[in-house]
Amino acid sequence: MRIAPAIEEATVPDTDPTPATKVGDIVAGDYRTATVFERHGIDFCCGGDVTLAAACADHRLDPAALARELEAARSTPARQDADYASWTLTRLIDHIKAVHHAYLRANTAQTAAYARKIADVHGEHHPELARIAGAFDAMATELTTHLEEEEAVVFPAIKRAEAAGRAASAPGAQDAETIARGVEALVREHEQVGAALRDIRDLAMGFGLPGDTCATYVLTYQRLQAFEADLHKHVHLENNILFPRATSRFT
Image (cartoon, rainbow, N blue to C red; front, side):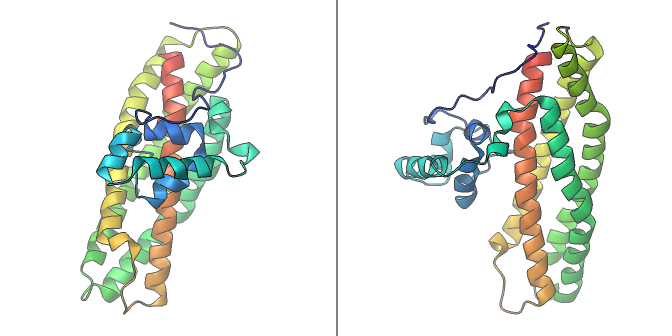
């Protein structure tokens, strides 16, 4: 088993992507590119293991045009604190918990309540709303258990393994096993979450609003979109940065 170095370099090189580069790796290397993929409906988090060429083919995009968009995004001013790939795993975990886990705990129940409310009020003319509310409720239930597993089991194991590396020691065998098995399970659950998000977006027709909406209808769709955006970034940080680095170093 390898002993991790005390100081870890970023694992994603700052080079121009090629057609064979995975979408998730592009965003992991430079989060500014996420806006390009979001604009074209390309999943860079749960589905981030597809190549740029495959994504262009799936979405009928001109590869040269998409490459120009990515280059333009990479040329915009970068935030100094957004170089997630260069952070320690402990810092990244603390950020995920403080920002994304906190967001889920603060917003999930209220968003679910709004979804159920508009389904009750507008469901007769918009039957898709009941399916949206049901899909969101099911996803919310899964996320509750998912966060608990991360915070109580997998994240502490990664932190202990990183601390061992700083002390020039190998991670404990139990922590290495926890990381390997835990990450595998969490990634599978992320795939389920990604499928739920796609179902909700499809049912909502891309969150386009019909002509008979009320203020609560508009607010609910805004909250669903914000929830989706935060969860996309959340899963990206775990699937494309935290988990690959942890498994490559400690298992």
